[in-house]
Length: 271
Image (cartoon, rainbow, N blue to C red; front, side, top):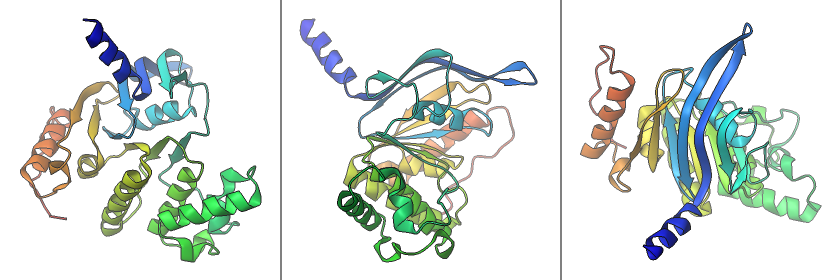
């Protein structure tokens, strides 16, 4: 029995994010509106977690609570073993719009959060992360000179430049065309595998959630509750034309559209 408890204790230390019984409300016209309800989620180091659900179910709010950008009143939210009380240097965030500063060159945008570092060290880190996302040739360009996909790469480089242990991604590819989006999905997997960063992504795209996630968190309509956490096959889930991929897709559709006449789509393409 003692050995079992010891193993469980060691396993718990691997949780980089721990959320227990989290509830969140917003005031609208002085009336409390439930946004998240009894969220319990533990995330291991190095995982890629995707979160799906209907618009307004609290996905982005949950992500911002993990980051420390939104307060919570009820429950436990821990990051790297400590209660979340605000943003921290080891937790980066990438938004749907790249939020690059238009008056700064790309290299200065990427290094914006590193201003306190010595110049030589800052420039080295910027160069490393521009190379990581394939933008080293565009270091002296301005955001207006980059495509949407390139701008998101720069935003990811900026998010990673501070060497965070956690990178939160809030619909980062939502505004991209379909082909660029697929390319960026492959790129973010490459970066995650190279850097070993724990990544948590909110997305409306079910295919994207399956393709990227080691586990998929399915939230109900508001107030967002966890309907299921689907652990996917580590090899089969990236075969978009495979049997497993379609099974995961049907499972998620059945959760999200159980009360509607929505038809679960068949596989449409193979990448």
